[in-house]
Amino acid sequence: GEDVEQSLFLSVREGDSSVINCTYTDSSSTYLYWYKQEPGAGLQLLTYIFSNMDMKQDQRLTVLLNKKDKHLSLRIADTQTGDSAIYFCAERDQAGTALIFGKGTTLSVSS
Amino acid sequence: EAGVAQSPRYKIIEKRQSVAFWCNPISGHATLYWYQQILGQGPKLLIQFQNNGVVDDSQLPKDRFSAERLKGVDSTLKIQPAKLEDSAVYLCASSHSGGVSNTEAFFGQGTRLTVV
Image (tube, rainbow over all chains, first blue to last red; front, side, top):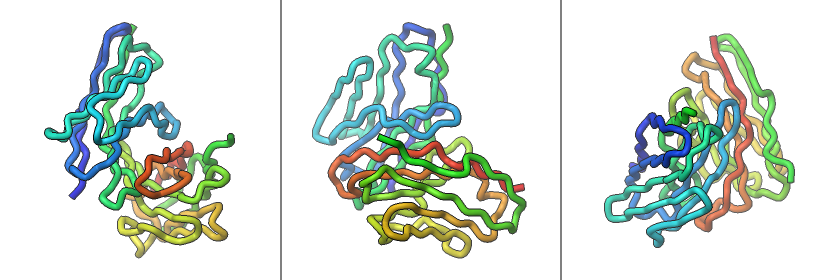
């Protein structure tokens, strides 16, 4: 079945780069997503990548996709304390409709 | 543009009681989702509507959960009777289309349910 795996915690210092990793199982996924969830808030779409791309850059965010290994990563450059949150990797289900989420990676940024 | 509205924000009930959650999606969004997010886990899809029809409810525990989307706009999710393991945040999301094309799903703030 479809499954998305992520490491649970990441701790970095302010100004460093953060790299959050994700693996997925459904090779037919057309889009892969990164969502951010702050305490008490809903999920906010950060960025997404189409499966025929290897990399996508959006300001401080860089998404890398290794389709052969089914590995997705999110790099946050110059990490700030405001980036502290839970980050979810998600893929579309086989029907291409709903999202399948990982368990989330808690990013803690210290000053 | 107003976001996805959900109410209530918090609810505490005793097991075996019933509870209902309400969601108002972004105007014009045909697709509406209900997700369950248990503490420490990612959101899990419960049900997806396209207008007022159900697209996917395969993960909905139909013996106790029900949902409707009358007139293809607002939606309610009901649990009756509630169990302790239903304690979670219930997230509503909406999007323009539920198809393969990349259409962003916008999430509400969620309703945090605690069953005691």
